[in-house]
Amino acid sequence: EAMSLERPVHDAVARLHRGAEALWLRVHERWPQLRIEVLPETDSTNTQLMQRARQGQHDTVVLTTAHQTAGRGRMGRRWEDRAGDTLMFSVGMALPHSQLSGLSLAVGVALAESLGEPVRLKWPNDLWVARAGQWHKLGGILTEVAHEQSRAYGVVGVGINLRTTPTPSDASVPPIAWHDLGHEADSGDLFARLADSVLSAMTQFFSGGFAPWVARFDA
Image (tube, rainbow, N blue to C red; front, side):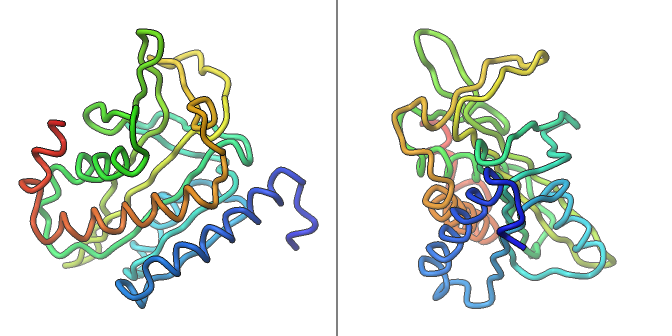
């Protein structure tokens, strides 16, 4: 099946599989029941996990894909991508409580710290980089909650520009890519590192709320 995929998708899937293996080696002792899935294509990784949650699936899972056909951003905005040009993944986890104010900010802090300078967090869910006196968008975060009877399930979606992408006509700031910052645009390595950061941030947030993150967010 993999060999029948178009070359950009096939190559992106191969990199993500390598990243999934690296992620498992990083986190399996902390999350032995974690499921990591790689799809060649899907409508939206967030949509997929939200649908599963409404069907009663509440396991901890990381879902990534080489291409989204209906990626979503905040306020219903469409997230465009081309296979291999964008890192897209979602983390789903059962919620121990309903106090989620600040979750996107905590995840954003963890991502910005993992990506390193010069990445900054713009409230409430964008990763921005300043270049030549102008802000550029490197990526975004989409947090959603599915309620099923007495249980709740949180889904955090992440999208990072790996390579230069066309500027959407409705973009408030121009995009910038990880490759533009002088980094190797390998979705596999970045996937393992950032997914680990999101898993850790969600776990820490659910145990202590946003208070421990305030100073790091202010920075």
